[in-house]
Length: 329
Image 1: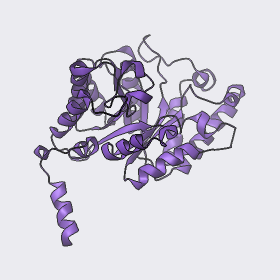
Image 2: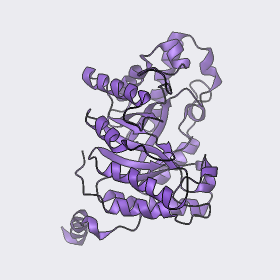
Image 3: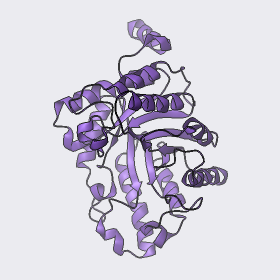
Image 4: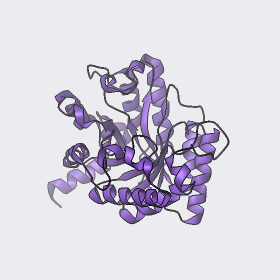
């Protein structure tokens, strides 16, 4: 076996009390990942890239895999920015989350003029084109993003180009196409405001996942975006109720507005809720530094504008280190 084998064996049996010093390494101790969203446009910032490489073992391209970026003209695929992120992540052994295939926003204008049958063809072709390009490289795909309406009655989908022309069945069609395009990637439904276990929007997603599992529609995970000021009190219960349906839960776009101990405590509760549920596979924060955050005024991330670790960083690291080792689901 040699020295390498012995080192590997030791590493895999390191007790949780042996406190890792980075987020990714701390998460890996319990069989999870800790990732971040990355923008290719910031990769010329050496501190940004160094912090990414040191702290995170997973990545989600922030905008580079969205439809307007990957297929701006019909049938003409462009992957420059996304390829840059993917190749860097691969060279550092990171898990890669693909985001996102079918969404009502950030779509090119040519989609708006298609007939129903043509739109269906375009959707499947887009899924095949993007997933085919990255086949074997992506750990999990957000196949459909933000399809449910805010508030409203349980189960109501938002009105979009997809529901207007393809009807409510477009989600199932997208998942079936995605499974055919890359049978080995985990297929996720991703949404925001589905953190409260009892909210109407959450119940709608829950019922859809339950139905998909019952009918054999391929779905492997639910992504909780978790953009908030505070996790709801039943956040862990929510993760557990989705896991009980037989899917993984991934916290996909976490950022928590605030500062100091209040923010640190909210982050801690999110991490503890995830690590308490075996099928909560990992956490992605939506960016590295407050400087580049989409909600920078809320200072929602773990590093401040100068890449200094905030109190929230320490609370997350400690919570990850305290997690019970977890066999891969």
